[in-house]
Image (cartoon, rainbow, N blue to C red):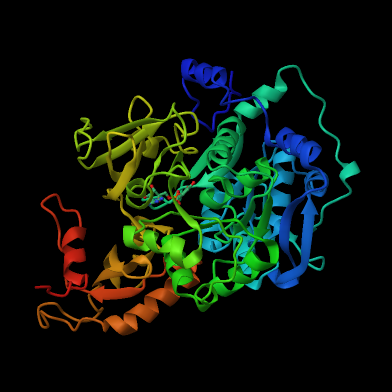
Length: 571
Ligand code: J2J
């Protein structure tokens, strides 16, 4: 049976048995998985990239073999244990892309500590919210001044939090891998290995639609299943060289099949600081990159970058460009083979679990026109109307899902869980999709109060709530507006507070604040609150009152219609 763990909602025992019998859940924790990889691929290159250096700047270029990665994981486990961390402790992992991220992550997993996979873009507001929800023991971060400032804010709110800095020997508490020999595996207990694998390995982050970010508990069994199955169906081999260009700990970059899938196949993970075309083109050439995962907004930059446009195109090693995280227009997808000399593979996934892939070699209408089908024959898909009644194939409906690697509940969020899951355990994805008779899904839209800004998810409520703290804001609504590059950008529509001292009867129409000035003001305000920069509104509009639906909710469709650019009239 799975480990009893009050902080995670288990699958029903019958289904858990089915998943084990099918060989999906193998009772193998990440630590043993890594040890086996080191045995199989020892001297091969596992990781390449610039190690994290002082000040959070890129340091020396390094190549780590599988044997070295395994040793580094032990060394970090030992170093963390020496700092007093224990199995089961929750730890925020907040590092920029680098080989170090994977070494520290696997070190935490070897120790049995449970990392919360923050994005490097997160700042004090997000990190403090994670620390508060999960009562973390430690925060592991880099030496970049922004990261250090955020860490100090976390410590101010939670003085017991240990802040450990990677890549910076002069930091107050540097985290350096100890000698691997300093790590001793805790004594094995009968049945403990499989129990351990049934328990929580790490916490992914929800894109969210509510005021507080939700933590997603993923077990060793379920997460490793999604990694293995993804690597297999994408055909990864020891010759795969995967470029981790999007944030390394995001579920897509990490597991679909991503960095962990590449390691599972014995391939090489190359880290890039970000998806900028010039840096990535150089890494592709230097390391012989074969696979990369991109969001559509990054792909658009690649398609227009001079580095990829030289004619004749230099023979490139790049074979597959995976695109996911946000809607990809079919005509953009079609440009990939000619412009980048690689196949395009659409991926529609979510940190809560379900991942859909277009299988390699699929017909053109599937490759360009759908977002694939689920990994597992045991992924259950329901597409329903507003009353949870199934709709016929081809009719758009709400996507509900459950299966061997989709969570049954968020971490300590009973009220939210009651809304986000059906009574029989289906996760309400918030996505509107259609299904073809052959099972392929196409994303049609969204039914969640979230903005997808170039693949980065913003929960409207989180920012609206923060804006209410500003002295000029009485009501606020955050909406997404179409944007040719990002897919969507954000617009905060603000109903201002009456100006103090102005008598509403004498001046029935007090002057509205200037939207342009307010934009700067609100962006600065949110930055000071410590929000990740991608959450700052791109635009601010001011209205004397926000439009309401008959139920009294802010009428966001009306706001979107009001501020969206009018399409040009075509005749
Ligand atoms: C349209 N919308 C998409 C797609 C995700 C692989 C790939 C992506 C994610 C991810 C992931 C989309 N077309 N191809 O975790 O393992 C939107 C949907 C979805 C939400 C999930 C993975 N691919 N989306 O993006 O947790 O709205 O995961 O519900 O960040 O992104 O966001 P996230």
